[in-house]
Structures are given as C-alpha cells and as structure tokens.
Length: 367
Ligand SMILES: Cc1ncc(COP(=O)(O)O)c(C=O)c1O
Image (cartoon, rainbow, N blue to C red):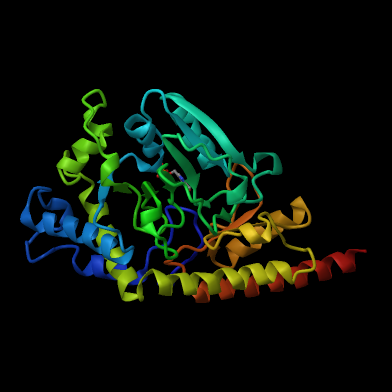
C-alpha cells in the first residue's frame, strides 16, 4: 500500500510508526488479552495508558508543576463555552483578539456567558495578519485575554505572545500545539482538539494553571474544570481509544527529539512551500502577510478561479490529499502538521512548480 500524501486540516495525517504500533497492539494491549477498546476505563492497564499520556505531555512541553493537564471531550469548540463558564467571574470582562473564524466562534460563546470585548482584530483585512502585541488594548482588570495561536483557516500564526501580567492568557492551540517550543508559564490556559498534532479526534487537551480551577456547584459537572480535575479526567467514561492513540503520538514526538526538533523540521517544511509561492512571480499568492505566516497551514490562491480549479484537480490526481481551502474562504491550503513528512512537502513544492510551468505554457500557446 502506498501512503497518501495527506495535507488534511484535521483530522489529519498521523505518524506511520504510531499506526503500526497500534496495529501491533490491536488485539492484545499490555498483555491483557484484550484490545485497548475493551479495557475498563477503571482498570490498572488503562489507568497506566491515561497517566502515561498526561505525564509525557507534561514532559515534552515542560509544563510547570502548578499546571494540570485535563483530557476532555466536546472538542476545542466546547472549550469556547467552558472557559468563560469557569473563569469569567461576575463583574469582570473577558478580552478577545480576533484573528479568524475560530476566535470569532470562541467570542460568540463567551458573549452568552458574560461581558466581553474585542481588544484587537485583523477582520477588516480578511485576517491576513496577527495584530502586533503592542496594538492590543490591554485591560489590566480582564478575567482573561483569549487568543488563537494558529489560525487554521486563514493560515496565520502568532510569533510572539502578549505579556499579560496578572491577566491569564488563554490560547486555543488546536492547530499548532507541539509544533514549536512554548513557555507554558506565560499562559493561564492552553487548549487543543487532538485531531491535528496530537492524535485522532475525540479528545481535547486542556493545560490549566491550578489557581484557575475553583469549585463552583452552579456549573454543570461535565463542564466543570474542578470536577474533571478532582477525578483525574476520569469523571465519566473517556474516549479510551483516542487517549491511547494520543499517548502513542506523544511517545513518537519524544522519539523525534521533542518539540525543538519538530519545530526545526516544521520550519523546513513550511519554507519549501512558501519559497515556491514567493518564487512564482505572483502565480501563487499567499493569503497571510509574510511576518504572520503559519508553519502549520499554508494558504494560497492562483491567478484565476479556472487555474485554481485545474490545480486542485491535478494535484488530487497526482496523489496529494486535502489541498482545498476551507469551504468558508476557498483557495488552497496545505496543512503540514507534525506527522506530515518533509518529503511530502518537497514533493508538493515540486508539483506546484511543475504545474505553474505547464499551465503558463498552455496559456501562452492559447494566445
Ligand atoms: C484553531 C481551531 N480551534 C477550534 C477548532 C474546533 O475544534 P473542534 O472541531 O475540535 O471543536 C478548530 C478546528 O479545526 C481549529 O482549527
């Protein structure tokens, strides 16, 4: 079987080694005579897997001791509601920086819970850039400041994070967690749906500073950080298979040399495609301004709708998967998460060059 050159935005490519290890252990996990899906979530075997996932994440992200890792359900989207429900206290205001559709959605949910404000936005420029940290109208009394560290749809990424003093910085890192080194101590909460850099869909990682977890009986149990924290994220039946795969992906990330090494490879991967865009004499046009370019989602357009249609048709025929831009904005997008190998990015860059040559030659002939 030939492995697809998978540029899907999420669910996305998983490391082949992870899939092979899961295959090897499929019928018999931890010598239990059962598959991981058949284990009780209260069994010693599963608890070991669950705790291993949490410990490995703490290790590779160098998460300080005053933080907790929660493994929750409901996707990153449920965090849009859980965050304000748990940490937006009466009389306080939650601040949001708008850098794309996901931050808009996060804001929409927070508005249902309490007072909010938009303190910086690139919406008027179709989200082509990340606002400068100095342009954020910081409110020193805010309940928190929310950002989206990587904008999956528009292909922009924060390069430096705002200093927020005593205001907790909350970041949706769904599409760039583990892709580069992050100083966790700068954040109050980091959350991410797993289905891009961490594993399959069905599990959401929440890294939360312990002082932000407070008891509040008014919040429904399943939406209450305190309840999940007290039960080590085993309050109800967790998605055991997804947690197992998360633990394998984290082992894999560690074996690759950790986040620093992954960041180095990700930079090389992104450079191969961005260089192709920049050297195409305007044939390919990147959506993001260069200082805001994402190393995870490369978004670009072609000179005409017809050229774009032809490109998407031919790239698919050539065995590249998932190059269509998000349905809300169109265009093209290459999602190059940790598990996408450098070779696939180099092959895509070579295909893009070849396509440009043949398309331009046909255009010239037609004149
Ligand atoms: C940055 C970002 N935030 C949130 C989400 C929503 O995640 P989920 O589908 O896990 O709720 C996505 C999904 O692609 C995303 O890219």
